[in-house]
Image (cartoon, rainbow, N blue to C red; front, side, top):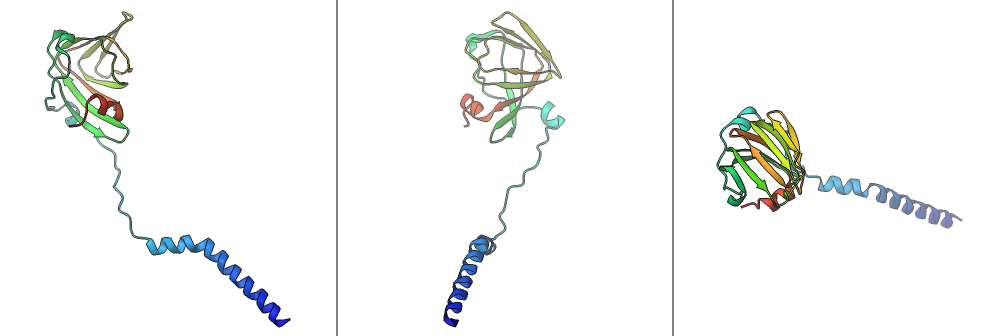
Length: 169
């Protein structure tokens, strides 16, 4: 009888060790492997006035000269934020009026910082924007884009679309 109880006790003890081992093994393993992981600090990015209204580096002209109806394009810009999902850029140019005959390649959010923008869709409707206005230019837009001499905008574009339109160097 005693042998049988010992056997039951042994089985119970082994079972208990197994349960404890299964429940706490991940905790013990984590404690052994626990090394302070260095994570990149994530902080807000300020778009202060100096960055939004200051001098901007010249960019390579990207407009097809045949699309320019009036003026001359001298693009200037700076990427302020390059995230995994979004690109935020401040962009400025001289007065230029262009025909957008190829469908706009991506959705683009614009906040007008200075100057004026007149967009005329193929529907003939004119849409006027000035400093403080915001708009979305949807992928596929065609029509006339006319911006004033002191036009400056804050632009937000989905990262994959931006990289496809303006491939990284």
